[in-house]
Image 1 (tube, rainbow, N blue to C red):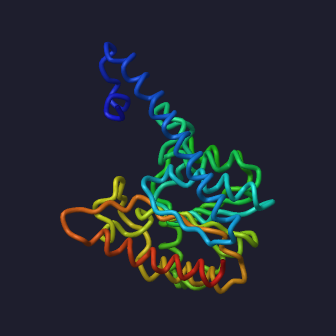
Image 2: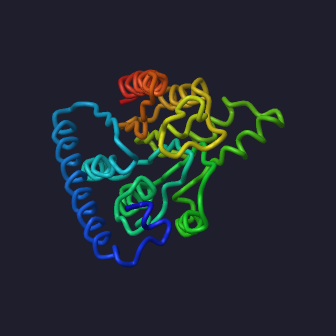
Length: 246
């Protein structure tokens, strides 16, 4: 279906594609409701919750559950992409729209995106429209600052300073250097090293902020175990951060 939509497709198949798209949107809503219900039940039991995807559309139900239990919170978003597209290729819910959909929740006070290196004009317009509610730390800018003598510790502290007291971490594995996730769906050159990512998360845990949950998405295994190995180690670290600061 995506190939059909991206290439213009065969007009004779338009009705079929519309039917499939409607079915996918309906299934996505059912998934969101399911995740919201399951996460909410565990939060009400006093549990700390992490979600493992799946593509990056999966945490929306998680955000909705948190929005019913917190007056406001921020999202620390580690990713190669901004994910601020409105209904990408006509799909209400997709990996390219998760932060756009999250911004519909008034309880999401801030989105701080780190490692970004691939975005479109439509997404930049959303950033501009939100007037500071979305803050972007582009990978190229962070790299250039370090080439000029800045330190990752100082950069992490500036990133964390933009976040409110309560923080959800949403981590798309393609926020890392693609040598660490070669089989993820949309790898992009550049990105964070593994030690940079875990240091930022540890710095967040030490900042006094409360980590209210996390999700780790887009880990896709290949013929060997490398992607899964990296993903599992990152998941382990995220669990530790949630335990320490949750």
